[in-house]
Amino acid sequence: MNRLNDLYDLGLWIIRNFRTPISVYIIVSKNYIKVVSLENGLAASGDAEREFSTSRLLIADPIIAEKLATELLNRVCSATQLKTRSLNVICHPLDNELSNLSPAEKMIFTDFAFQIGGRHVRLIDDGKELTFEELKIRNYA
Image (cartoon, rainbow, N blue to C red; front, side, top):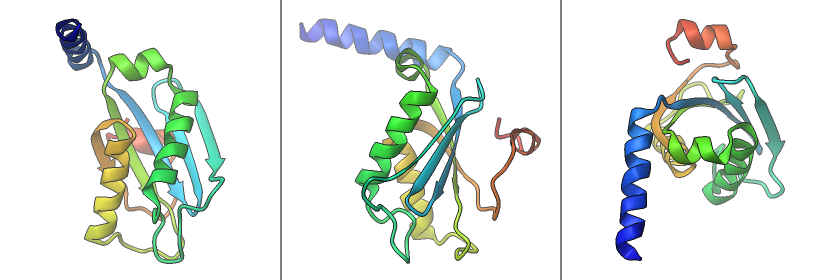
């Protein structure tokens, strides 16, 4: 049985590496996350049941933030897509009080994106939400 699981994992790895990846744009605000699929244009957003932000950090409790983001990601992409394709995550922290991200905050957001399944992560340090056209111009989509 163990060898069969290994073959299954190898098959998924081969499929995942040869299929084109799924790109998603994730906006993180204070206790709010929005996920937009750049492949099909579907979007899902939601507020956290419990707060994951504080006055100093957008993601102070990563477990709650990851749970919400995973829920929203499952609404935007099918389970088959998430299992058989790698995930490109464009993470965009939006906060009016933050001007630039510190190295510690960059590490928090990068870890957040990897924990929800991202294989390739890009952080956007911009003050406003980007449109699909702006993402294409910047070669994110």
